[in-house]
Image (cartoon, rainbow, N blue to C red):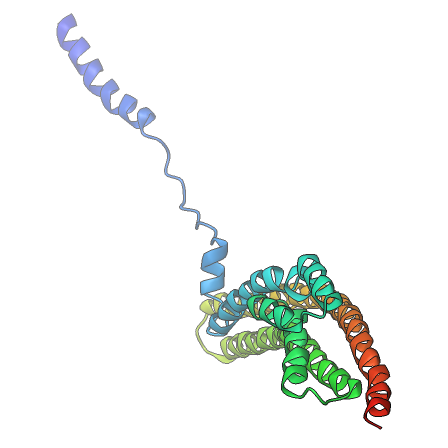
Length: 255
């Protein structure tokens, strides 16, 4: 009898213990979206903004490597040019200029090429050649930097376009007869609008900052180029001055 009662008690206690061991059901909480998911769900305008950001980063890397003093005026080339000009070895300097890629080397190359092909030219014509080539190099530097300013203006406008699309979706959800899902669509449209605005500003603000940085750097390099060109022209003027002094003597000898 006691054995039977113990079996009955064990049978009753087993389901109770199983219920206590089972954890209580917890309602599923929706997981928050990652940043990448938010950007993907922000609408089609994010595609050109993403491409524009890649182009912006590539431009900054290229400008950091090219807009520097060594690419415009190098101390090594200027020392070689100074020594060859004082020796009046213009052909040697022309060969050295052809091997160098600095902007001042291209200016000197244009000057010496004109001088060797036109031996009877005066110094004013050589100065005009140097000024024309220097202006071309300066315009090239300024035009390259302007791309960053263009990105700084286009990116916020694209973000504003995405904002308009998000607001349109929000008002469309308000007018739709979809019950409680209206609020979900409304919040989704507002989120899309804000993400597009933030993405446009996140690209435009750094682009304008880097534009200001590289514009100041380009202006400094242009000033260095002008100083180097003036130095080369001053050394060339000594040659033209000596040639002008020798000309009357030759005329007197002929008379």
